[in-house]
Image (cartoon, rainbow, N blue to C red; front, side, top):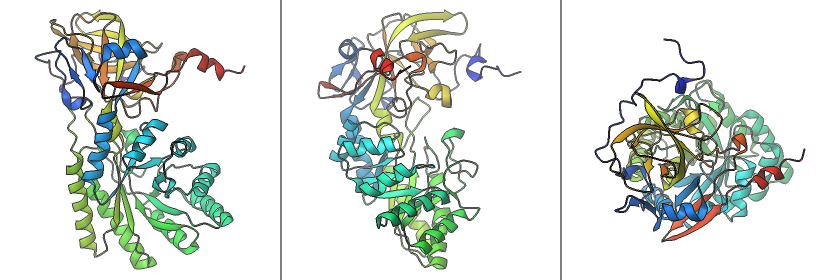
Length: 461
């Protein structure tokens, strides 16, 4: 059967949902593992978060809106800090970053990794200690590297020989010795989407381990002496649920570390195994608690170092979406309901791919719930779609919603804290939604809603 030329989303007519999706006994019930910790429904079926109901939040802030459970966000920071006690935990700025988030990270004594000049500027503007920052990126500009050096960024993860040369020139000119780590592609492909698996050989990040480039990068840095080589960095992907890939990654990268010690005489004191720990978007996802991940990863590193006869380096991890992802959900208002006989019902909301591109980009799966009332209607298979002029504008591919879902209802989609606002666009000239932090019955805007005036302000033609 020929694939649909417009993409997979357009070629599945007659499909009755994925095999893992089960008809719920109660379509009103909240699947709590998918939601922030303070989220619950009251007797009338209205969703609450942080002591506020979503109907009042929609009235005050409008829809669509990203609603961040601040207590949940803080709790997840603490979970990873406590679970990985003795290691450094870096929050992923690319998942979602704004000044309010940086201030929370400062209060929770978290580290932060950034991968652009804009993320670095946001971190510095909000008062993050530069020593707690790590700068990533496969093509850092001279301007970005210069600012990192001049502000005292704690470590720069070098990604190419061009960057080593570029950074060394900046360091010599300023008479400083920046701390660096070498990003190593270890040839381990995480069980994830091709575009977010980052340690196989055929991709843009890092120095190849198998091809010997990572060792040559270490040799060059140590021989030049301009940069302070602190250790090796490996990141095998994102949305990872088990530690088997980390076991292979640790074995390979620590073997390189042992070779650097033996042949180059350098005992590197640090090791970053990345992270990219998975979260639950749907009932098919089963993420591990932070403490369990930490126990397994500490054991992996200890066992490998013992076997190689090398000192155990100080460990760093980067949980990625696992901190902010589950802390936020997106609230939409239904505008149009269109049943397609024998297939599914299309529920159109007032947002879409401009506020969540992940479904279209990664074929990502999400869940949804009717958030503004309870329903006694039977469950129906629905597809939540956006308002954009694009057939692939899908938010939730398959979900059971009440058969009486109607215009004016509020629909909430969990797990949208990571990469949704960060990757949001103005497709069709649609302004981006606000981010509203909710805690102890109080709500505050931490990123305001864009307006048409904002769009026109950039248009100088």
